[in-house]
View 1 (cartoon, rainbow, N blue to C red):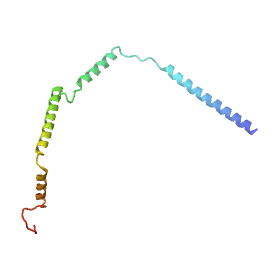
View 2 (view 1 turned 120 degrees about the vertical axis):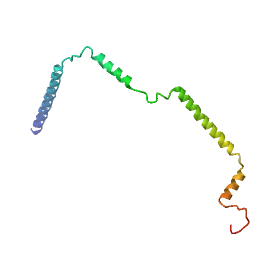
View 3 (view 1 turned 180 degrees about the vertical axis):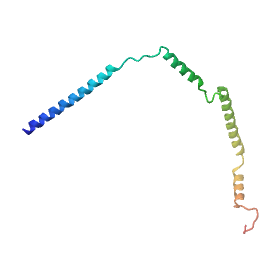
View 4 (view 1 turned 45 degrees about the vertical axis):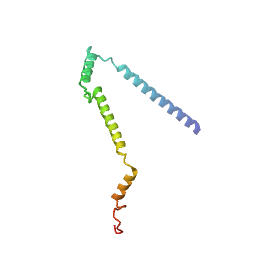
Length: 119
């Protein structure tokens, strides 16, 4: 008998839930029926487009002075500086390795021109 009462209880609960869901659906449809057509000014689109176009004209390009011609000249100057630096680096490396070693030894007193032991 208890299982029958429990079964009836669940059936009644399900029916109540269905009624609540149906009531919510009906309330939603009532809200949709209450929505009315919105009246818009005839020139609304024109006004909005005019404001958008005005805003576009106000915007300025930050690097407008950096034209393509100036970019090309800047690139050429940078390349010229790089090439000259490379030529300078290779032309100054013509000194022999032995002279570099002698200069290093003299700087750190590893080689002396005198024959003194105390030096």
